[in-house]
Image (cartoon, rainbow, N blue to C red; front, side, top):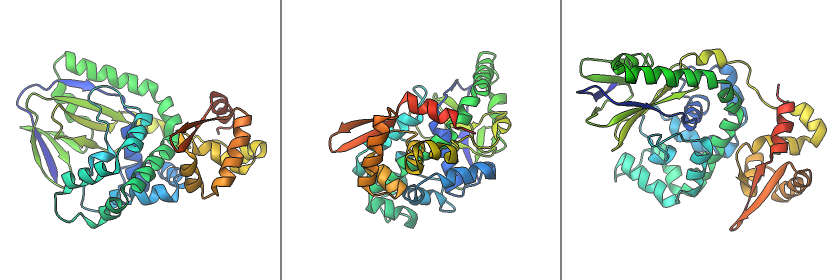
Length: 324
């Protein structure tokens, strides 16, 4: 099936370098089974580094025949600037659980929710924490390849800029991906549910991703702009062996639990998140965090009832030494 975006005049284009959509595409491919060309080696690496709570949270995305998801999954829209993964995770953690319920009702109507979203509606706070943890684990695994992609992303910015200035947006939009075509009335985007939208005077924001060759994420109903996330051309050159800390060597230096803890906190996490994700008793997490803090490898910050843990620059440099 195809969703149609009807375009009656030359569209205005802009570009956003927002890696949170790359992380979302990888979650859908590696964890939810919506395969879009991510290499199997990376799929396994991502899956192995997400906690059971994270795996449970992304299950609703795996339901066949559904492309609609609540806005909570992408609460930060890339239309006003670049959005980082950290900002996305922060938005998920700060979102009141009732807002998830409202998003589900908006996405699926006031009637009974689809079966695959009912568990999230029953425990919205748990779902939000689990999904945020999964997003952090995915980004912790894939951030090195994003850093290596700087030249590709810069080249894509120039390509979009040239198409915009020289008046050739139609040619550019029709060549974004095999799942997007430029037809007589506008864009056709492969979808599991067909729908029709009018672009009107809205602009189109393009978001290049480092994802499988067939990964496309779109939002066609935002009031201010349409955004389309697509694989950046040339991304296949980056799919080498996943770059991750060599845990055996790191474990020999700091011990296996502390090595696993350091690699788990690619993004700031609470003590309770770490305990749940690593399946380690909270008292043990506290003990090991004491040792890592003494070694100046983590920082701890109390926010209300929770203590948040983050890696220091010294820890980042140590992990870089042990990356393979």
